[in-house]
Image (cartoon, rainbow, N blue to C red):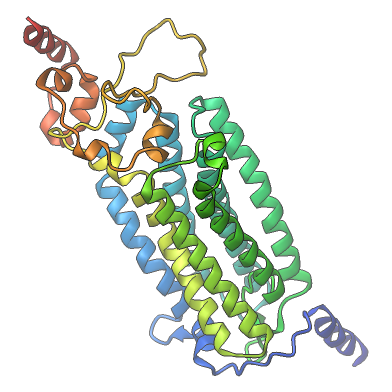
Length: 379
């Protein structure tokens, strides 16, 4: 009768990734990963990730009407794509936290569900990371829905392959560092310390390479971004991955403080990455005011060359900045210091002008009336 139990014990010890690092379950950096808040019986770790995401989601909700007007007026696939990625990421992160809070971790099924949710959220975040970089380095001047769709599909498959490998390691070779024997559960270990270290080093090197490229001869061939905020974004992710790789290296060297380092980097990544994408690539577009229009929009023509190609914004004073990707990647607040003449402001797309106002202020808005006003100004 004891033989099945012995086999089960041997299976668990065999499937657990060998790691001689032993961290006390009461160590604060390990305790915070599974400790519950007594009054509500939810994990402190989930609450710490949930609250910043909820705050950011509330901010997006308050700005949704204005953002919808601007996106509809701009008819820009790349701005729309970035906005959808931001919304989707923050929504999935909140959903994971809420589901995790309802799970009873005393059974194996709840443990598996929790790990699966972590892997899915990481998959979505990673796809967004890669899409941003690919748009900047390879597809910065391709402004059609088909090219954007191709980039999203490609990065999604790469992210899915990465997450599948991470999930396989979590299920079949869970890292002993993230094993809680007293509760008979395995915490999400990001594929184990070895996998986590390798991936962190790879991403650190890739982001550092992007930072170095403008200083090489390739800057002319690749038409690299010159927008300072893009390189701030890349620099922050390089630092985050670099610090995370140091924490993983400490754990491999049996330095338990490494767990504190990876805890901090994980918390920062899952709470600040999505707002960072929004601030870097969308905030200036949504915050433009009527008195400082960053660019005007061409009127939508019926005789388009391709159904798949969209009408893109252009700036009359800066002929080299003709696409949305130019605005996102190739400018450095150049529009913020620019003021158009009265006629330039008035010939802009009327719907875009309306989007610069609050939704309440455009009640009874009529396109015909706006067109008549424009013609009178021209006379």
